[in-house]
Length: 602
Image (cartoon, rainbow, N blue to C red; front, side):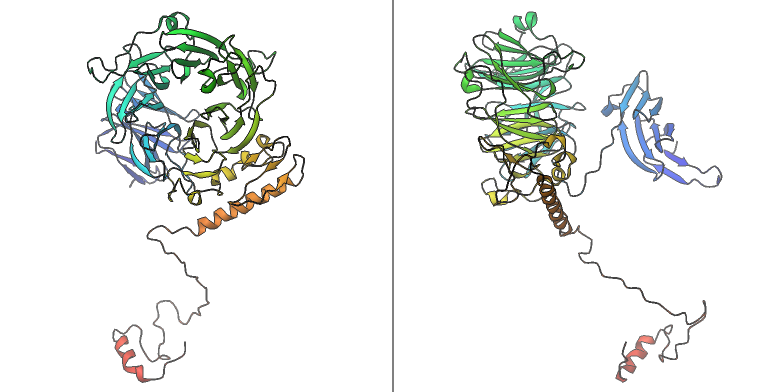
């Protein structure tokens, strides 16, 4: 009843060895997990706390409202193998416990949780990023500084996608709770919540569409339908009501969860689903234009060997699509086993090309295309960004080979979740490694949002380049011996010259261009030496970093000297040799009086 948990040694019953004080209501239940050395306690205010049995500190507090637990808590059980806590009320709730790795002090992160999406707002020159913890951050594009942030955008549900309205003044986010929310994102005020009356299903992607002066939001997700909300600010009573589903969508639409949506003005819309199906729609009439089925990664592959055919990335080649070219590929999509497929949409819809950017078939996670469809940026689950020259690719028929790879580099150490070209001169990327970064089109690192030193986007001397983010430099997959980089290429940045298989590594602001042939045996040694040199530079920079407030900047050296024992313990030493008594309170006075005597050498 006193809200204190006491820990006892059974052989010393007189006094508790530890007292855990944090509950604000009487404690009603305790569960001890000997395997993990943790204590789980429950109190009458429906709160569950996790304690460390070694340090007697509270590790985590879970409230029933925040965790979605209904009813009065009765008991709990922890399973260490699955790291799951079962809480019993009138029902049983399962809480998965995820241990957050403490960030390394020298690593720069933009969010405390994995970043799931980010977009650039050209109206205000700002970057908005969202994390799995339903946290929204607004960054200054020109300097990388944090401008504002707000948490709990979708309550306990995570954010899955975001977009802006045509004016850029409102932010639209979609979440796992099945809702779309409209924000005045500078102050974190929610203007509207959009949802269907039906059972709420996770929203996977959304886009803001403007057709014939009609503005609307289109959202897709696990309900397998295309949900449309008209933007009619002049009529607030009709504002954001869900529109009826298209007949073609109801009768011939997707049979699996829809993962992605992409638009091509003035009226083309593409959606893709978990089973690999791609549907092209006419948003004016609501009719289906064509249906595409993603090819298998290789001929003769069995279904059990290739179960994942989901398409989660779509990108229109708009200069071709608006002309309705019947011989050229007009759509890019990812596919099974890390493949990328070029599709012809007009005439007879069919795949025009299929290739795999990553050597180890890492799944493509994001794509971006330049305005003139000259270059395609493809990012994968391992954090690599591949750049392809597609200006003349897939124009006159099927292609048997992959397009020319202009370059590639490692941008993140985990899956890239967002990739966007900003004004054709800067590449914006976000990743599950909790970072949001800016890159030049050539792969030069401008900086990571949230770093201590701001950059000036118009001054290349202020960019982080040629410094590589430390976690990328030291990651095992960035090493030349790793299969991802097999074939004699470097981990930093690679250019393939026209008609010749040579690579060029950039190692400084004004690098000396050193060329290596793919079979050069000295490549790995030289690249490893370069990586070792950069690591030494990073360590040297870390050692010269300004110390934390309150700590000395220079530590004095302590030297040990032998001290002879002059008397037994407890006896007053004989101080007659110095002519004074150290235990005399008048010692300082005596010292002053004898200042006329010659000073002794010490």
